[in-house]
Length: 462
Image (cartoon, rainbow, N blue to C red; front, side, top):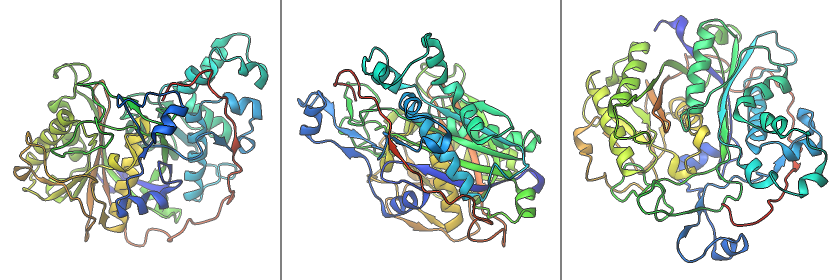
């Protein structure tokens, strides 16, 4: 890939468990903070949930889930109360990412696209449908199809485009947990194809409106003890969380010409599917994952020997993690990697699996690691899974923060249930590429959040 094919990350924003912004997230990752909330028996009982041990009280809780700056985006209190919290999160996150990039959509002539995905609208299911309180909140459309249409994942990017008056392509991307990283790949390709000049890419997820935990089912994919341990011998499964993230992308040549601050550079990317070469629809495939990494390396014209860090999917399921390491090993060995040369990590122990937002949060972590030359620890890792001969692979997993001298190159993976895989390669920004802060202040607005929330009809859901 030539310099003309490189994409600059010029803005980043997120909301994650324990972290209202990128700065707090990076601090938590470096300090090894486990931000997964573990509810007390009293909290479970108050929510009508079992306290007999069948319920695992672990979840990546997002502070202020009920709150939203409705006025900023032109919503009445009534309309805001009916809006899917995933849409609220991404509206605010997209705004903040543009602020970080020093871009004001009201002033720029650049055609700006939006590529984003989110999860199922659980707020509609648990809080609105059949709820008599909805009638007191204000009139609903006579036809419920109107309400359903406005609250689905299809309308997430178009809602942002409408609120911010963005005229580039607005494309919904739905590939389960890989949605937001696939959105980044689609946005980067749209920029190279000159379909837009600026792109916002990312996603949001509200996996649980109750934010309390989950019922453990033997043989399932959720952690039996509420602790996520990627690549570890004691791993029993994953823990979920709520959150959102967005990046602002430009062609690198344009970013340099405009004097933008460049956090990092996307050098290559790829999206594949496992097809039928796997044990079942919900089981990942080695060949498909190896192919997406190899394709991204080929697109960037990189050999794997220069990649010092990989932010893996790393959900903490023993089978999934073993398959991921095998796939990475195949791709890296075929591209000249050496044993133990790369640190393999995952941020899911810190925040939980953020579902449709997981990929873009992993990308933000990776960009920060490349930019600042530090690799955060993978929490709760003590030793590799017995099914994985980690010492024979090109990877190590570190339980401590590591300094990372340059030059620095990294990869980030995200895999969705159903087999859609994404891999993005990240390198350092060119020397002297823009100021340490955004080139120009935009609004500087502090969100005026107020509670916009309709309580569910009955307790008893997570």
